[in-house]
Image (cartoon, rainbow, N blue to C red; front, side, top):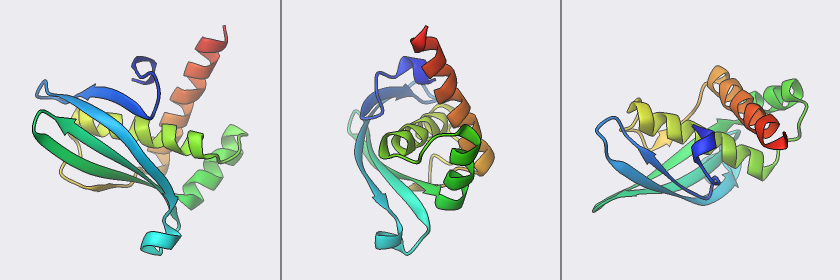
Length: 126
């Protein structure tokens, strides 16, 4: 998935029905200030023809802390944005949870996304 994206700020994903979705990063914000929730929210705008949607990927802070220790990397805005972009990509490609506006990945999904980012980093470093 990630190898096909140039960056997390703007990319394209095709859903199971063959529709191409243009995805644009809007913002990243600590959800404590907007929803009184211990998470990092990453908001994206999606468009396919006249169909426009907004999705928020809510990354639970406790899961991010655990993952950052395992991955031996700090929690940064770009890392969170990339994790969120990968999760949104999976949602669009599979159609799973596509009706939801607020998407909260499970810890094991975040782990898989982080591993994918690490694999991509290793590949580009060669």
